[in-house]
Length: 185
Image (tube, rainbow, N blue to C red):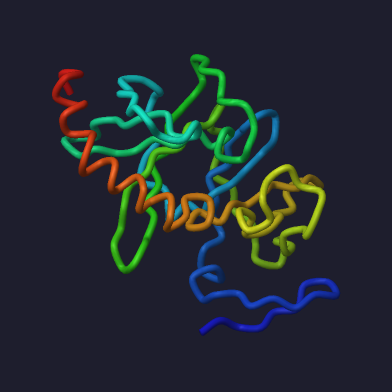
């Protein structure tokens, strides 16, 4: 059960996990700064060795072989309805652990570049705006204030929703092992 917290003139429920989590990995995407709670991050890897999967939505770049496990890779920019991320030497894949139905799944997300790990106190996080952002409001956990600027803190479980994960899991089970073998992974 969460605690009721007042922020400005708004009230919001803050889960106990959110109260404890105040470290966020920040990264660039299309010139904007985003953040994900560090407790969801497993690792950051160099972009490469991606196997494309046919008939997947535009925002799914493909899969990677991560120490013998097949991990789907989502282009976060395309997921937000923007153009696909342009791959540069700073482009990374952030491996995120997502929980669905009491199971944990690893999903990679493509970002332009990783910035740093920041501490953002709960009192410095505003509720997501109801309008004016270029991504869906349910994708935003909050707006963190850092050095007079806002950082968009993403709600990982919404960005990588249950429906999307079910589709990814089905594709992974049905299509990917054969594709990984043919790619020599």
